[in-house]
Every structure is written in structure tokens, then in C-alpha cells.
Image (cartoon, rainbow, N blue to C red):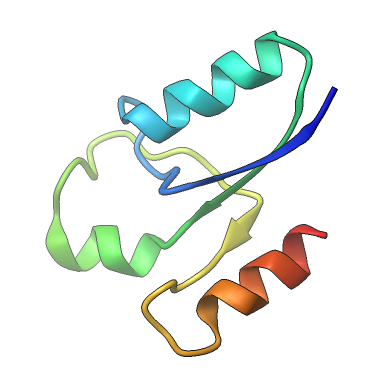
Length: 72
């Protein structure tokens, strides 16, 4: 099975969290990434948060490359 990186995983009720859970159920190795700072500042869906493997600010210039490096 493949190793999969799922971004945007912070809210338990979110699509990304559901995708990550399903991929794990299907036997894939899953690395999750989110950015708690964003969710805290925007207060959207902060009611139930889940832990992520990596905290990454994808809006930062180094964010996407740093995320990939950490995931590997």
C-alpha cells in the first residue's frame, strides 16, 4: 500500500480527517498535516480538533517544501 499525505486535518468532523481515517482503514500509511494557528485565528470548526503528525503553514514560502521534507 501507498503512503499518503493528507493536509488540512485539524477538525474531527472535517473532510480531510475523514479521508485520513478511510485511507488508514483501507491499509494505507497516512501522514497528516494541519495548522492549529489558522484554525484558532479563524474559529471555524474549532469545536473538536484532532492531533496531526505535522504542523505546517502552507502559506509560508518554505511551508510546502518543509512539509514534504518532514513527511518523508
